[in-house]
Amino acid sequence: MSFQKLFLATALCLSVTAASANPKSWAREWPTTDFNNTSISNWSEIMSGGPPKDGIPALSDPSFINASDESRIGDREPVITLEIDGQTPRAYPIRYLTWHEIVNDKVGNTPVAVTFCPLCNSGITFDRRTSAGVLTFGVSGKLRNSDMVMYDRETETWWQQAIGQGIVGQLNGVELTTLPTWMESWAEFKSRNPAGLVMDEPGYNRSYGANPYRGYDTSRKPFLYNGENPPHGISPLARVVRVGDRAWPLERFEATPEVTEAGVTISWKPGQASALDGGNIAKSRDVGSIRVKDGQGNDLPHDVMFAFAYHAFWPDGEWMLGNR
Image 1 (cartoon, rainbow, N blue to C red):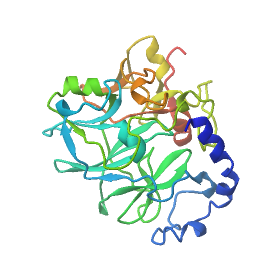
Image 2 (tube, rainbow, N blue to C red):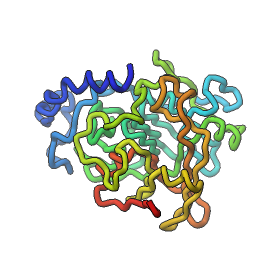
Image 3 (tube, rainbow, N blue to C red):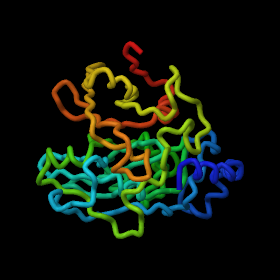
Image 4 (cartoon, rainbow, N blue to C red):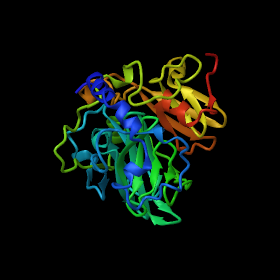
């Protein structure tokens, strides 16, 4: 199904969804979630994304194969790369994360949650350790500002994926530690890590490699989003590089492949396909890959997300526009 057809089908039930945005109606599905402990002031911000709780099945303890043995993934397809000192580098293909959105894994002694929200193009990896213990994350089926609301199976707290923070429940206000991962092409990962590992294909009946949001990142408006458009004439679905509370529009890298500002160096190179363009991810248009490093050359946590989502969650954030 194209994004346009999906949008029209869902738009028909938006008024019903908004009217039912009430914790009392959710309590039957979430009997152990403490809805009185929340940072949400307007419940209508939270909408159903369509699938129910766990309707999008998160993965846990996935299998991996040697990168050299993988032949199903196209060279230009995006993967989220996780490199932890002392551990074999791992690639988490977006062709799988598009359909599962969360992977609960453990790399050495570090329990991680690798996450991808297609509607915001937001790919972030979190440390699953908290004051309440190691958490296991699932997909709630809810969206806020079009961004996935995760939940943990231990306390059933709701978490906002884009900011890595509890928003409803026992762990409201708790912030997850974000790990430095990045999205790059499968060819880039293999070239740098010929002995690396790649997540194996999950055992679900899904059209892995296909994009169910065909045409989304060139559409005029976001899906299930009622907030403000970004300022400065920036398209809502333009990609921006977010580092902390600052955002660099990806268009800045059309003129120069590297920018050093605010204590960080951001570099861009071609070769990575968009996961949200054509029906076949491997054949989609090139959007390139981003790396973000500090002054000592260390990789920094960041996100390459859509501009509307950055503006929604960082309304007072700093837009790094250069001479735009």
